[in-house]
Amino acid sequence: MGIHVVLHEPEIPANTGNIARTCAGTNTGLHLIHPLGFSTDDRMLKRAGCDYWPNVDVHHYDSFDELRRAYPDAEFYFIETIGGNHLYEYSYTDPDKEYFFVFGKETSGLPRELTDGNEGRCIKLPQTEHIRSLNLSNTAAIVVYEALRQQAFMPVHPKKPVD
Image 1: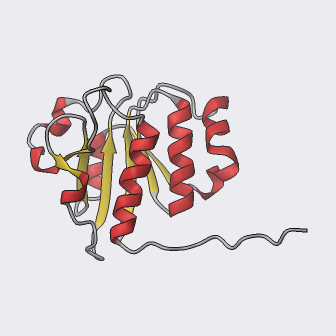
Image 2: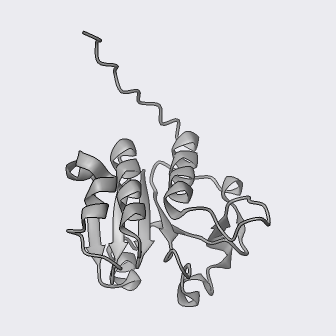
């Protein structure tokens, strides 16, 4: 059973770097759908991901269809601010499944071609009317940790002794 974050055409390198750091800390796969709004050599991308990039299982695709073909039996959930059900209404505990959480561009979200016909797989997080949306990297962390919580993910990094 695996958890995966899919960023569909992300635009802000710092968000992708922060998400990569979350992925490294949780053994979550990171899938990037091109075009990206930045270079993968971008200083901000590397800075936000710190020195964790070697621990990130990252994959690149030219289209969402290419990703779907690579994982035909996976469960795909589309994270959006409108419509759909709440994150907490779903179960992510089947040990035989791969769970993919798909996030859209920071400025426009997911394209309708991905959400149309997948309304039962569209997920939103609770929020007030005071904001348009939560930050992408914060939202990804909430989603990943909810799925992992359901799977009883509890590794603890041992503390280093203090000299």
